[in-house]
Figure 1 (tube, rainbow, N blue to C red):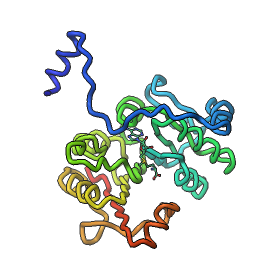
Figure 2 (figure 1 turned 60 degrees about the horizontal axis):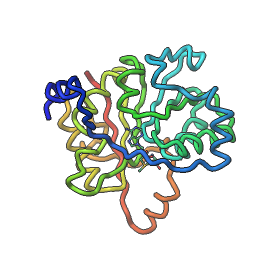
Figure 3 (figure 1 turned 90 degrees about the vertical axis):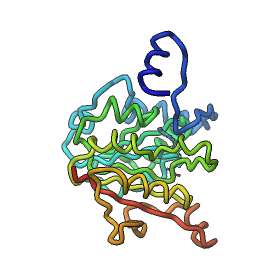
Figure 4 (figure 1 turned 30 degrees about the vertical axis):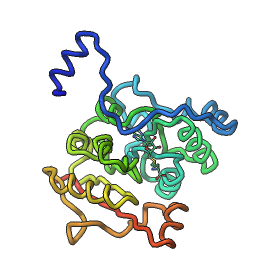
Length: 238
Ligand SMILES: C[S@@+](CC[C@H](N)C(=O)[O-])C[C@H]1O[C@@H](n2cnc3c(N)ncnc32)[C@H](O)[C@@H]1O
């Protein structure tokens, strides 16, 4: 359906679900996650309803800002924020238990440079992030949507990266990683075909895992089993 048809249908009061990259699961919170949400949400939580963010006000300083989409349980996000206290980190995740788990980890690490959203990243980027505000956007192991008929649900698509690009400062970097070869190829195709990006891989393909991306347990196991992981970095050049 074209955008104008969709708008017309919505104006006519028809409910039409647009394609999303996730399925909202109502997972139960553990006691620890619930307690962390109660304690730390007032300090670290951001809402879509707040609208456009003033990063200097949110973090109480001016610093380069890294945004992670779909942080899962937040392990690598917290590790990265702990390793780079000179940067601001914003995480976005739709799965509430994951947000709770991330806050628990952030409390243990004593982080003050992390804020999180429990919302669709597509809408947060569109409505809450000012143009040029971000230094890095990272998307690690996004849902691969294995079946061909589901590929349209993959987050990394031409329209998405085009909407994301102005949110990065010039020279800012989009860092993607996946353990699904077909999605890696799809990412490379989308990014190589998109205007105003430069592939940071010398051979215009993938890069070795950069040291700032923590190795996940799952990835360590995968490495032993000979499974691959593909990292891609593209910088905004226009
Ligand atoms: C396969 S998991 C990977 C999680 C984590 N990055 C990791 O490496 O363990 C993908 C995550 O992205 C989240 N997600 C998918 N689409 C999203 C969206 N549009 N906005 C925010 N989170 C999203 C899902 O809820 C899920 O937790």
